[in-house]
Amino acid sequence: VSNFKIIESTLREGEQFANAFFDTETKIRIAKALDDFGVEYIELTSPASSEQSRLDCKRICSLGLKAKILTHVRCNMQDAKIAVETGVDGLDIVIGTSPQLMQHSHGKSVDYIRETALEVVQFVKSKGLEVRFSSEDSFRSDLVDLLNIYSAVDKIGVNRVGIADTIGVANPRQVYELIRTLRGCVRADIETHFHNDTGCAIANAYCALEAGATHVDTSVLGIGERNGITPLGGFVARMLVANRDYVRGKYDLTKLKAIEDLVADAVEVNIPFNNPVTGFCAFTHKAGIHAKAIIANPTTYEIINPADFGMTRYVHFTSRLTGWNAIKSRVNQLGLEMTDSQIKQCTTRIKAMADIRKLAIEDTDAIIHTFYENLYLGHG
Ligand code: HCA
Ligand code: CU
Image (cartoon, rainbow, N blue to C red; front, side):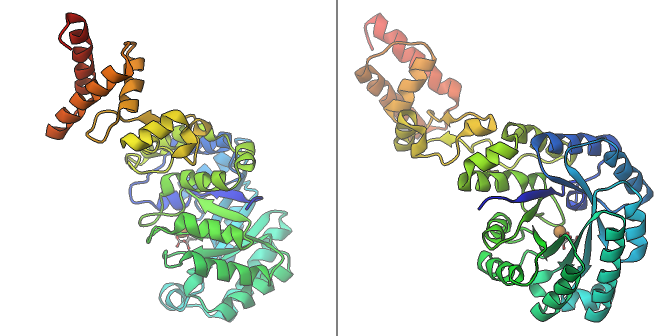
């Protein structure tokens, strides 16, 4: 899978995260960091949401970033008119199409949606801007309704059509089938947006690309409504494994950690311990068997080279599961000289102590040092 683009929505979907409040300076810092990382698009909250949102949108458009700036608006002419005046490169238009949303959210019919979509798309195009039309809650929408609306906007030259799993209900196989079907019906690019309620957001994005989608929405750490959407970091990790040269060629992966720290700080959360790439233990190897192989050759137990992200691996050596290769590596780091048989004896002591209680690095280092000193006192 290659040739995809990221639509980074931390400053739109991410603003819908429970803890998010981005002041203007924070938005600018995040936008610049995403631009340095190399995302192709940055999506901003609708300027129709509030006066400050409108001002911030104009401000970010004036920064002269390499990334294209989009704003995300409801499918109506009032919102579209406000949005085209902000200086954005394009509009992402959205409206609910599932029976649930048509009934309980906006109360409009499929015919009404199609006609309004045509009017708004036409209008945005007449201003020379990019335009995407997306349904909301696509996976609970009627397929005939969807294809009906998408083919209509496709005929008048919409740039992208969007599929959104608003409620996180879809599984990868369903995603593959819907995108495959859509790919056969429109010539426009296909943008996709996946919520993560059942943990499928990265897999769904990947499957969508396999089926012919061209654009994927992400947010930093996945922040968004409820538990969020496809996270930028996990998604690029997935794509790196699929096509390393392509992904390294277009994104500066070494900037990922700093962007995540920036956003985590702004929304007052910690980086999850099990986060792909940047979780504190993402490159920690613990069991003796793993440590031995990793020390001999890192590809044995690592599909991602931490150096690609400017990260480092860590060989855990302070547990009952450790082995003498890990201890040997620590002994070398400490600048001590021991024979292999001495290291094996020392490892036995460490494991015996680790069976009794949890050891910190300092505890294990102390056992190593004591063992070493005793060798020279003659009672090792
Ligand atoms: C929402 C809207 C949206 C829009 C997605 C898109 C969704 O419900 O807040 O425009 O691609 O998840 O449907 O985020
Ligand atoms: Cu969403």
